[in-house]
Length: 327
Image 1: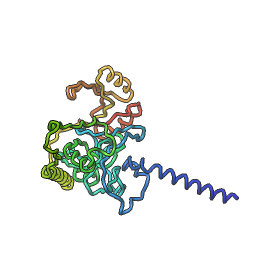
Image 2: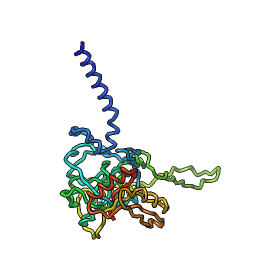
Image 3: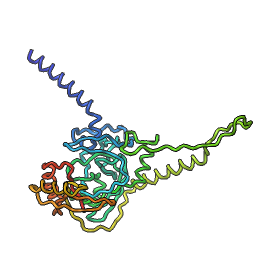
Image 4: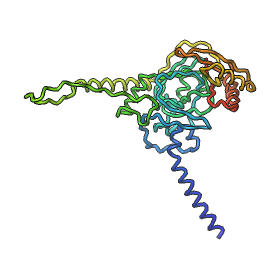
């Protein structure tokens, strides 16, 4: 009797576990390579690698909320890391198959795919990559590069690098247009709704003997527009496939932990005082697009490890949005 109950309990546990796994599939795919840590089996060889244009809904990882959105002005500095062998051949967050030998990257909030230029601020190497996954979710990392991307940027061996990440707006729009042919993303974007246009045409007076004629779009114009669009897509994909590394001038940079940024000086001073137990933050006044901000920062740090340790302390003190920046 005891054995029967054990077998029955085992069957129930298996059924419950199977149901939980099925219900979690969609959520796991959202989190990209973070979620893939939960499984060691790659997708079947014939798994669909068809990419889709995906912005995604807000999501939470390790107590931190992320808000994906279109941002064609995105330009940020920080620390890059890379990922490869553990995820090679597995699905990315937008349905592609991850190839560690291709040039790609994971980002927490940019649409997938997006095209970004990543510049290693330590050696001046610069590379155009395709964002097709979500991550990195380690504190203090701004982007996670594929292994090949890290090799080309020259930081595979050291594991991390100070980088600048700039979205390439035109190329990103081209990919969005290709993968969302209906004219909009598959999921609602956090942007203003576009305005349609109305064309007015004078009508003949009542009783006119001239029959109405249908307005036919010029086939030549349509063909030309399609050709331009196809050429733009081809040029973007050619640029991504080239794995071409350019060299740009860079200046010396420092690593900082930014605990917060405020439009009011007194708010910055209050946070600085509250974090005095963690260290000695500075309150700096800066102007961004004509607006004055007061940043609460620690640093510069000696290295990434020191910045990581301090960042954890600042987060533990209640500043979940604190981040590592390079300046």
